[in-house]
Amino acid sequence: MRQSLMLALLAFALALPVSTFALPLINAEIAAGGWMQRPSGDMGVTLSGLAGTRLDLERDLGYDNEYRPAGRFKIDMPLLIPNISVMATPMKFEGEGSFQQTFHFAGKTFDAGLPYSSELKMDQLDVALYYGVPFLGLASLGTLGVDFGINVRLYQLEASMTQGATHGKKSVNVPIPMAYLAARFEPMDALGLEAELRGLAIGDNQIVSALGRVRYNVLGIPMLTSLFVAGGWRHELIDIDESGVRIDTTFSGPFLELGLKF
Image 1 (cartoon, rainbow, N blue to C red):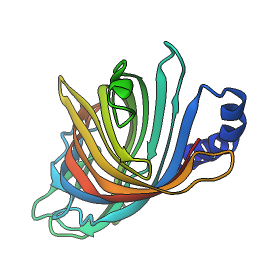
Image 2: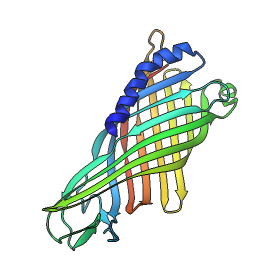
Image 3: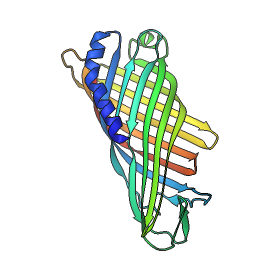
Image 4: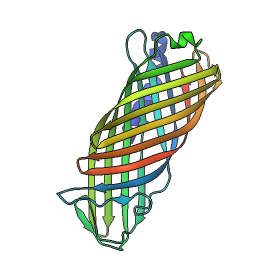
């Protein structure tokens, strides 16, 4: 999934100048960078009727901070057509550990006190359709904007555990509908402050995804609006119970990105 998402983002970046120049009412931006993902929480995997033991990501599985690439693009459409935001976030953790008791994972039984290795993938793809609050930009002389809409997040989850000849693994795709809210404040042309919030609380699934971004426009480029650098903090609270995969975790940390705004 990571390779296909990154290729899609690259192809879109190459096509952006052509499409935006052909349709001057459309504004767009694309950015790529990395996010330092700091894990905490626990997970368990149930398979074949054997309930999965809840294992702590740091203490029991040995997961540590991981720096992973991330990319996004968005298009501001004219008139009544909803704007589009797409964000791809690969996530992968690997570690080794041992557990003081016999435990179950993905339908397999693992022995107490013996070392094991595990891997957790949680690739995310967010697609948001949103509108801006009418006339707010005009009233604030272009310094303030607020967007609202819906976001669909696709999780591609894959968890595996190996201890000697014993191997348990389970994969599941989970689509999650979420509310989307964003705000931006641009006190000057070169500087912008941005925040995004995606959230859901329904049934056994509760997700809160929040980020704050500081953007600095480095320079203007002929036929383009600006080249910018940005950085900030991203926090993900993920509580999912789907198809036997139980994940109750948070991931947070700083991110950096480089982008173009057309």
